[in-house]
Image (cartoon, rainbow, N blue to C red; front, side):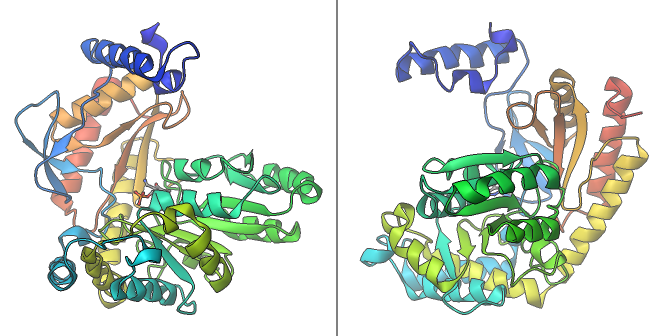
Length: 418
Ligand code: PMP
């Protein structure tokens, strides 16, 4: 029954081999498209990231200029002239690739500079950071290397998929999102049973834009002899007085056992990193399979060296983004829309029903607003929403156009909470 099915139902079908399963999945995606329920072709942009994107989709086959509310390029550093210039100079100096994995000749001085700079960005000693190919890999590879069958990962249930991926060789427990009682119950039970108890949370949660109750979670974790890992992919560079993320807001920069971040959002490039004690970093360098057997950053990462400097040199981007967040959040709330507990550049418009949310996404697109429709399994079944994310370079005209479109969608579909 394709009508009620979702992606997850096709992950595994016991009697079908992989190729047969792919055929059934193809039938499902065809059915969903023919019935106008979901779009299985990627929206394609022809002008890169920015507050405006020229996109084609199954609904508009000729490129259409839209206000983009989909990017994680929060500070728009992908387009910053100084970042671009540094990336180009990096390529001119070193060529286009690293040439090998770090252990066997693919470690260059720009890797060393990048790792040292990231460590110092968090006020740590030079050998406290390690770069991975993506943020996804920094989470999954770190957990895979550190936690074995005698250990346990205790996850806030809303952490990113890459964290779950990293728990395949260890025991996995989940606590209710930001729920201290639920966490304490697990920590108490795990105390005697498992060797390492590693609690993993996000700094900023990627679907709701809310922050972890970081200080309380850290205190609780320490009381039970555990360690804390924080993935602050959406916070680092974006929030906090000095752009050090949610961890800075809680004043815990020197207290978190493992910080994980991405280079693909605020820093406008690709890659991920982990910041921890020099011993953990040394261990990961030689024990993480993804580190040992895979090449990391290309020389365009020289752009990242500049992007990291700009977080300190040009705080205006964070101020512009913070102003936009305040303006847009107020605009949506004034329309009666439910934005939940967001405290970041990710602002969801919670609708609930998946079909209504799909219709809302289409109407927004018709009105020239490109935002993401998030349904199960991205979020729980009755928790569908339009997810927006803001950039420093959105201007008031962009945001007003988006607010007008949300007002129109609300008139048509009644998506407000009151
Ligand atoms: N952590 C979180 C919370 C994320 O939202 C994402 C990406 N959406 C990642 C990690 C992975 O980052 P990357 O895109 O660099 O792989």
